[in-house]
Image (cartoon, rainbow, N blue to C red; front, side):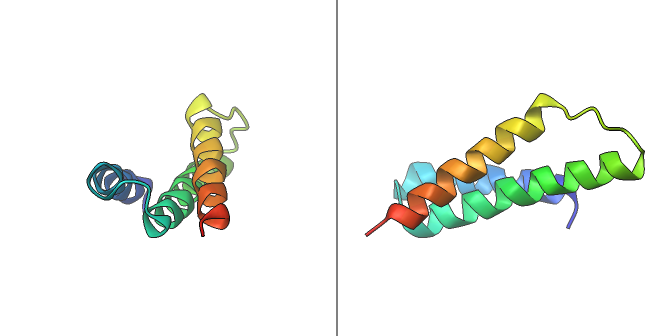
Length: 75
């Protein structure tokens, strides 16, 4: 999928987080979607032979870690 699609999915998932609270399923999907967004941007940068990683990539990777950790620790 495209980076734009992941951005759209993230906006919907953020709304789900507000509506449903801290649901493990929402955490899982937020985690993998943040990771996929960052991976898509990195892939585009590699295609352009640019190795300058924008701060948004680091942010999204940190968000992926946060939400996947919440999911992993859910009971």
